[in-house]
Length: 601
Image (cartoon, rainbow, N blue to C red; front, side):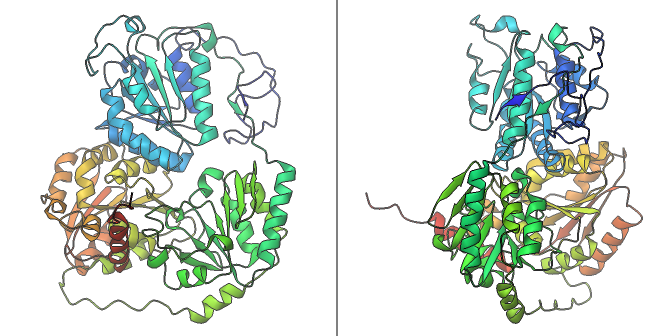
C-alpha cells in the first residue's frame, strides 16, 4: 500500500482527528520555518509522535538517548513517563497502544534495546503498533572498528538491529541527517499500516542538529486508505452468503484480529442483522459487546462458557471472524470443528470451507456487504435458549472462612461498569476473568498469544495513562508480580488510581496444572509492605490484605469510595490449590499436547 507523506493540498491533521483518515479540507497556508531549536531531528520525531495520537512516551534514560529525550520532552503535547526498567517501558507502550491505537517507548543502545526486546515481541504477537526508539552510537563510530560500551565487545554495532528484525516490521538506523526524515516517516507509517512494532535507532549526536528537512511546513502525516478489490469482494460475499443461507443452524464467532482490522462496528452490524448466536474466542474478549441480544459467551473448546461450545460445535456452519487457532486457544488442539463447515475471515482475505480463498478483501468491507445478503436465521440461538440453564449460586461463606477465588470474582463482577477496564495477567486470572460479564463500555485486555508473565504491571501503567476516563482493575498473580513489580512506583508517580488485586496463592499456579514440580513454588513476599515501601509517603497509594469475604467487602468499599483517587493495592490470600475448573481441564489438555512423543522417523 502506498504511503503519502503529505502535499500542500491537505491539512496538517485529518479534520476528524483520526489517524489515516481522508482529509476533508484543503490548506494552502504557508507556515514559516521553525526556529533552529525546533527544526531538529529530535523535534521532528516528537512532532510525528504527537501527530499520530501519542501523548505519552515510556522511557528509561541512558547515555546514548539523553539528548534525544531532551528534544522529545520539549515538544508540547508529549509527556515523558520514566519507567523503572526497559521491559516495563515496553509493556506500558503495549498497554497504551491497546487504547490509543499506537504507543511509543525510548531506551538506550543494546543494554536497553535487548532488555525491551521481550515486550516488543509480545506487541508483535498481539498486532500492536509500538514505535521502539533507541539512542544509538555516535555517527563517527560507525565503521571505525572501535569497541563501545553497552555492547558485547565487538566493533560490529548491528547485533541489536539483527535481534529486532524478527519482532518488528520495519527497522530504521538513522546515522545521517540527509535521509533521517524519510526513514522516520517510513517507520511510523509502516507501524500504522501493518499494525506491528517498528525499530528506530537514532545516533546520539544527531537529535539536536537542525536540518532543512525538519522545518515546520504544511506537510501532514497521511496514510492512503486501503481498499478492497471490488470484484473479489462481490465474489466472496456471494460465495459466503450462498454457503450460510443453506445452513440450518449457523453461528458467528469473533476473533482477536477484529482489532487489527478495525472491524468491530461492522461485526456488530452483521451480528444484529443475521440473527446467529454470537460467541467470542478467548483472546477476543472485550472486542465484541457482550450486551448483544444473542451473545452466548466465550468459545474455548472444552473450557468454553457453559453451553457455548455445544452450540458452536454442533452448528452446520460457523463464521469465524479474525480467529487465531493456536495450542492455547484450541485447548491443546482439541476443538471439535470441521474445516468444511467453517468460513474464516481474516483482515485481508476470506476462506470459504474447503473451497476458494478470496484475497485483497478488507474484513470491514466484507462484513458490511455480507450483512446485506444473509437471510436472518435464529435457529441455533433458539436451540441455545432451550438448553440454557443459569449458573448456580455460590456456597455461602461462614464468618471468617478463608476466601475462595470464586467468591472473589463474584464481588468483582459487581465492581464492573462502563467506567472500568479489566487487565488479566497470564495465569488463572485468564480463566476467572473470562467468566466476568462485561457491562457496555467496560474495557478488557490480556496477552494470550505471547503469554509473558509480568506483562500486566507495565500494561496497567500504559493502559491507565491512555484511558484516563476509566479505572483500571488488574488481576495479577504473585509469581507474575515478582517479575515486574517495580513500576507500581511509576503508577504512583503518575497519580493513577488503578485497583490491583494481587492474588497470592504461593506460586505459578497455571504451570502447576500443566506440569507440577518444586520450581513452581516461589518465595512469599510481604506484598503490601513492598508497595508501602515503594510508596514511601509520596503520592496517593493505599494497601491492604484480605483473607476472608468480610475483609474483601470492606476493601472494595474503601477502594471505591474513600480511596477512589488512590492507587489501591489489595493482596488477596487464597489456597494454593484454589483454581478454576477451567484451568484444571485446560492444563491437562495442554500438558497432553506438550507431552506428545516424537513422530516416528
